[in-house]
Amino acid sequence: MGDPEVGENLAMKELKSGLTVSDARVDALVAFLETLTDARYEPLLEEQRAARAAAKAGEGE
Image 1 (spheres, helix red, strand yellow):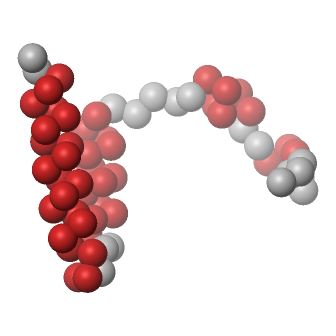
Image 2: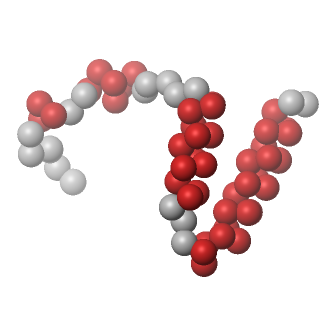
């Protein structure tokens, strides 16, 4: 890949620290991105929703 063309554009502090995003914000982003999905991928969305629901149920144990 190599070095970036303009190194000053990289936010190294944020990239190294990993900014935290709340679960609610992630859920909102996922919901928004799902609205952009073509109809032919709708079945895959259902699989993903079921997997997320199962994962959340597993966290509560």
